[in-house]
Length: 164
Image (tube, rainbow, N blue to C red; front, side, top):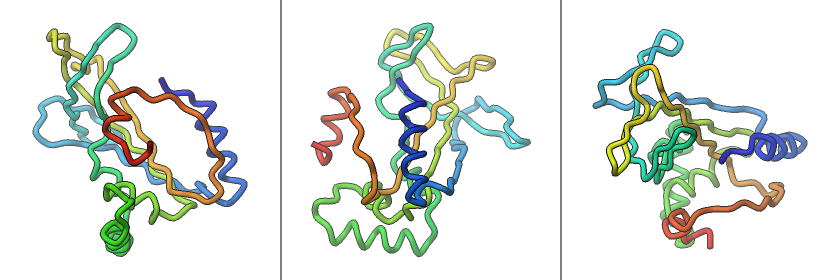
């Protein structure tokens, strides 16, 4: 569950240090799906995500973000530095984590997805007229970041042992 006030408080705190003052916003469009939505004159196709549970007020999916999407905002030079950083640091387990270290502290990334799919029982979601929007935020690593507490599920913990 998203808690906007927690995100806003964190961003406002970082703004005081001249961080997170610029944002790149990407509406991710995936090829290979038939369902699309027009946004700002652009045809945005939905991404397919398998759901473990679909109910009237929530959808549980394993992962929203396709890992390479986290560096859609990076320049060619920034990606070269991120790749070098990743290859030279054995504690950095993925390129996406390296990208967070390389992204300038003043710049955040918001990824917006239109998603569709179904759960194991065949319950569909994200059909035409009932679009589902998901978002993710990729923050740069910051020496000034205020620590926050949060709760994660066991799937996330199993997949992200580098945060343990």
